[in-house]
Amino acid sequence: MFVPSYAPPPIEIADNVADAAYGVRLGFIRRVLHLFLLATAFSFGVSFIPIATMSIGFPASVAFGILILLNVVRNVAKGRRMEVVVSTGLLIPMLIALGFALKMLHASGWPCWPLLASFVFVWLYGVFCGRDLSFMGMFVLPLTASSLLWIAADILNLAGNWSWWLGALVNAIVLLYLVYDLAALLTRRRLGEEPGAVCDLFRDSLNFTTYWLQVYWHWRKYPLWQR
Image (cartoon, rainbow, N blue to C red):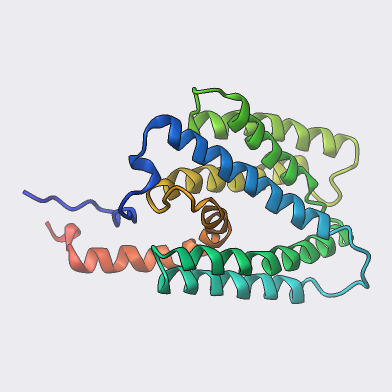
């Protein structure tokens, strides 16, 4: 007898990475982490480009618009190699826009460099954990190190308008999202689609706006609460 879950089932494609041997999955995760760190470092590098001060709304709106377009591309071309190519091409201007938004945040007293350090901690864990990779460990250990970094930044007056607890809270949310999404995308990507997986780590940030619609339609299809 089929018993549906209370949450929509995760998206799966044929021949996904989650079905591969452990060593293959481990290699895929590490390659995605390499590319993700390069992408975020590129964005932070853009934030150092000297440009005239502008409203943060413009680059943030451009980045948000490209994220929406990335989601459209994935929905239209899901499972095709073309989707990875197009998504990767769109990711570059999105990272540039995000970099300028980070620059404006820093100029207004909200530096985000500790977040980049958090991503470095996640990368270090993924690289040096050997064959003992645990997504729980990937969250807890970088969270501990980065939280201490936020406290140190606050004490040394390097955190701008951030208080240590607010920075640590935002940091925890970002890390939880990153690690959870990295684990979830293993069923949605095949080997060779590492650039597409990096795009997913950015565009999936919009899922919180649509996931509740998926839950609603799942409950319409399976009226679980009426039992």
